[in-house]
Image (cartoon, rainbow, N blue to C red; front, side, top):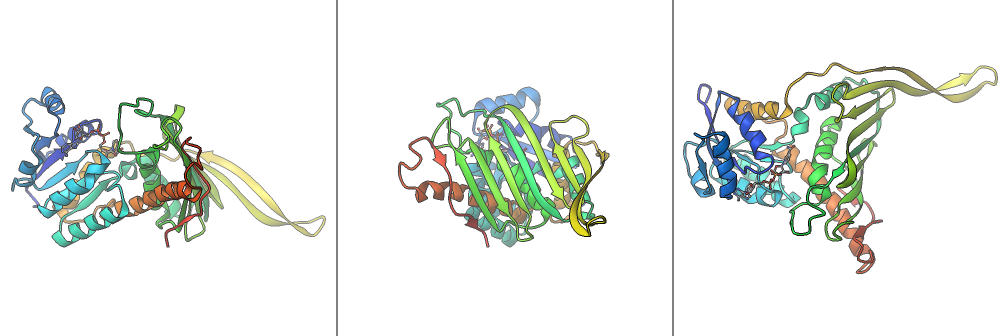
Length: 362
Ligand SMILES: NC(=O)c1ccc[n+]([C@@H]2O[C@H](COP(=O)([O-])OP(=O)(O)OC[C@H]3O[C@@H](n4cnc5c(N)ncnc54)[C@H](O)[C@@H]3O)[C@@H](O)[C@H]2O)c1
């Protein structure tokens, strides 16, 4: 396919689809054959922006079209498995928006199917293509932080739908917000969790958790906590990676200096007067590493096209996406088991999910 354009169809033109289409159209090596959405209203919006863009409501006509090489799927999470599976069976490469599926079993089936059919399966973990996340990976891999002790992450904002009882969403706060943080954690640490424990609560609707605290432990000993909420009046996107030599604070809401590195450490030193050994804490310089300047989604789309043309394995391939889903699944089960552990009425109908044994992933 070296000199051939990649013919792509975009499935789903809701909130995220327009960003994908804009980026797909920016690459000359890509031709958007169709935009497919089951909503006519959404297809009218496509034509308003791009009058010559072919559109369709019929997904079957897309997968049966022999000119189409690849599909980009940006539909609700509960539809990912069936749409991606049918695309793979039709021997089309697939970029599925995050998370890959809404349960680990379906993710495993997709990964096996893509391997059997010899097509690329990539997941849209956009943050792994962002300059700050790439820079942090570079610092960690160079040993710059020393050994990593723990990671603390906050991703909170006002929820879009949760105070509108008429809107049914197919996600809770864990499946909506945690894919980003979990994908970053697994990418930075290059390991999968050993255990996951979640405490959460559905405050607005008892059946839909809108605040959660996920605790994860890794085989290396690193521990991580992720705070997620749809109930915060302000948007916070803050991560702290604490190592034995340095600490990184990454604030994605900052326009400049998103990443700051703090020289910091503690060592055992001899107290000369008393001949005792004491812990000594050192603080030092703070610096903001230079970050590249590009749109993460543009880089993600380019990577997908390059992987198809050059027959490479995507960084966020099906297996990487599956590892994120396994962690999400464990976090969700931990919430559910908490409810079961304390029996009906244990949360008093107030949606509280709490205090369960850790969900072991080993
Ligand atoms: N990478 C990111 O940073 C990022 C950001 C936002 C959303 N997302 C992901 O993008 C996906 C879509 O999210 P959204 O917020 O755009 O959802 P949305 O509900 O706003 O849009 C989904 C669209 O898909 C269409 N659709 C549903 N089922 C369909 C089907 N079977 N065939 C054709 N069209 C269908 C709907 O009509 C709708 O227009 C989700 O997986 C979400 O997690 C990723």
